[in-house]
Image (cartoon, rainbow, N blue to C red; front, side, top):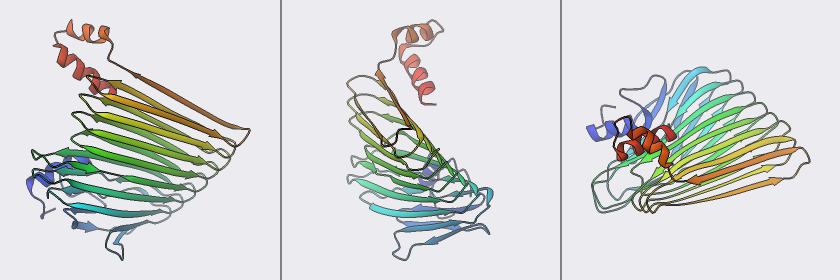
Amino acid sequence: MLKLDEIQKRLLKEVADLHKVPEGAYNIRSNGTSAGRVSTENIEITPREDGQGLTIRIKPGTKNESVHIPVVMTQTGLKEIVYNDFYIGEDADVTIVAGCGIDNCGSQDSEHDGIHRFYVGKNAHIRYVEKHYGSGTGSGKRILNPGTEVYQEEGSSVEMEMVQIKGVDDTNRSTTAELAAGAKLVVRERLMTHGDQKAYSTYVVNLNGEGASADVVSRSVARDDSYQKFDAKLVGNAACSGHTECDSIIMDKGKILAVPALEANDLDAALVHEAAIGKIAGDQIIKLMTLGLTEAEAEEQIINGFLK
């Protein structure tokens, strides 16, 4: 942490809610190199042999511990791809906090592509938080392309919070999951675009075992001339249950495309998709304006509540 300047510390606050050195295991990546790394007795963080990421091993039975692996970038023109592999032992129950913040004040594009692979043992549970944020006054883009792969063994559960609210010019978010019997996946995505930003979110979830379940919900707001595409596919290969939902607000000249896909390969696969795209209701704005808010303030209040 001592290696970080004030801009980098601000980015860490935005993407990982860190105001100081975190407790537990952590690796903080800054402009392509490690700015600090700590392992614990139950969580081991080691660099990959190729130097392009980390291997994180969490011992079976580990409870109430966390690992932070945020990335901050302030160097214009820097482009990197990082692979992080997580091995979560049986019966573990941990929180993993990732995310990337880019502050680009130059004329060249800055890009971080982070590929995270989770191998979740039997009856283990993880809560995964990934936040993306962009800032800076330069003309260069802030580009983030996260790829997430989840492999869940029997009885495991994964909760994922995927957040992008501000400042990312282009993003292509890809998530795939393979669920064994009794495994459970819950995803909550929150996304806002503005200006001429573009955001693509793709989910493919294979429910392979009896009793597996998935609940994938995206809430998003497209402002100005921005564009979003939400593409979600649930594949039921056993007696399972799955639900995916896209709930979006469109403003100004924004555009949103929702592409649902359900594939049932078993008689007892129960799959549901819901999608709703629309503008903010006028009566909601009028109601808040009667309480003393301006129209712009009323809109912001509604959006903040919608994305909370």
